[in-house]
Figure 1 (cartoon, rainbow, N blue to C red):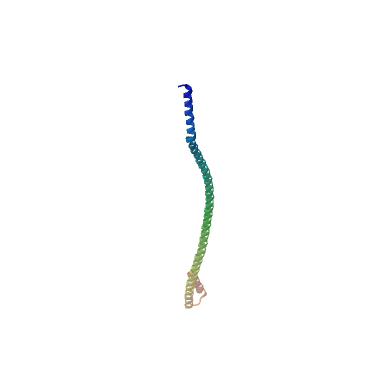
Figure 2: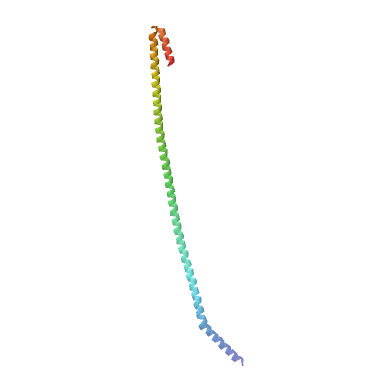
Length: 156
């Protein structure tokens, strides 16, 4: 065997191997690589789309949170206003009730004062009648009358 025949046989075997690889192994391998690249590209596109959707959802969430905070602040403000109205109403009712109680007390005081005056008039009239009886019983004397009137004045 010569080197030329061996070299030729090896070259032929190598060419056969290249042909088998090029026709049977290489196309499925390239298809698998292309499919993998497509899947990776689709995955990246889906990830980008998901990022965009996430950003949009986050913007919507932020907008809803702002709206909710605004609404909550409005509700709190309305509650403060209502509380102030209730306090003012209670104050007005308390003032009205105090005025009513004061009027009742003043009426009661006036009635008590009138009763006291009436009792005092009765006592004064009783004393006057008593004094008049004493004057009539005694003899008519200016000094005695003056002493009796002074005595009556002291009793009143």
